[in-house]
Amino acid sequence: MDKFDRIYALDNMFKHARTPVPKSQIEERLECSHATVERLIKEMRLYLDAPIDYDREKNGYFYNKLSDTKYELPGLWFNASELYALLVTYQMLSVVEPGLFDSHIEPLKEKIKLLLEPNSVKDGELSKRVRILKMTARKTNPKHFCSSASALLTRKQLKIHFMGRERDQETIRTISPQRLIHFRDNWYLDAWCHLREGLRTFAIDRIKKSKFINENAIDIDEAELDEYYASSFGIFSGKPKHLAKLKFSAEAAKWVADEQWHPDQKGQFDINGCYELEIPYSDPRELIQDILKHGPSVEVISSSKLRKQVQKKLEQALAIYQ
Image 1 (cartoon, rainbow, N blue to C red):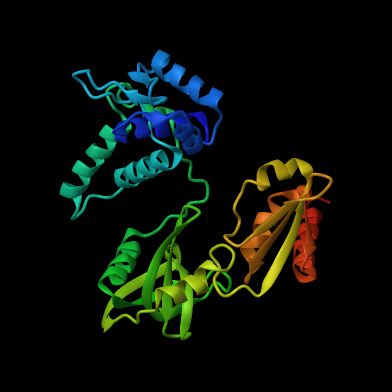
Image 2: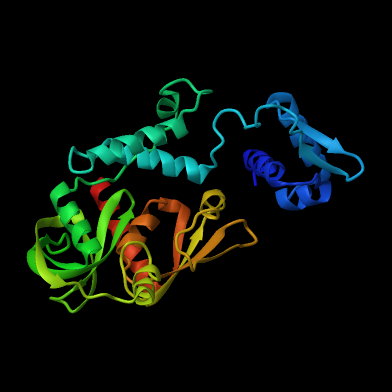
């Protein structure tokens, strides 16, 4: 918990407490020492004009409520996830094309804007100072996104002309949409494929034609969807069949040790400061791409098949420069 989170949590504690909050309770809640608590309170009083008083008898702190106005922390007091959610939502609404929901979207945008830019921040300042970069987003046809989302929510089947990347061939499929997925700045549709008689994931930007079918979609149990899609690595689905063991250099370990590559990953440092990461996977394609990004800072220990696949990719890349 950083300084910002602790001030935010301390403010919440004082606002909701009916009696002075004991120092021991503050230390436990904020996961910090007695000295840190005193320093935070001093800074809140000095720099944030917080009306914090101390009750010697109860050995606790509280907000003095004698003032006519309710105390609020000045400026922006979002945590990282709240700020990200608001900014992403605002940016997505800003690029929505004119349509049926205009009258509903504009008021929503204005409400989010008010949250992002309170009176203590200059108009438009936040949007200039905080950016969310999209590095790998592909262009999606709004028509096919709309039909995918509509079929998903109305629980109807969808007929699509899908151009697969791997074989670069178009196939006509009838699907029962299950979930929309936003992954690495792109949209995907998890669906039951009636042609293949199994669960598949379709990149919406690869849908060339789409049409509703007046047939109810097949519903797959949520637990089955989670098991099939969430247990493997990245966007590629299926139950994990393999376990990758990667060894990162001590320099790269400073970053990788704090990253989540997979919900069921296991990691540990060795005696030399290197970081060993174990990841379950089914399809190796996306995992190989992530491994290659780290270049000489990572070595595939196992499986032997994955090691050979990565080695082949590196040899092919090196051949270009020779």
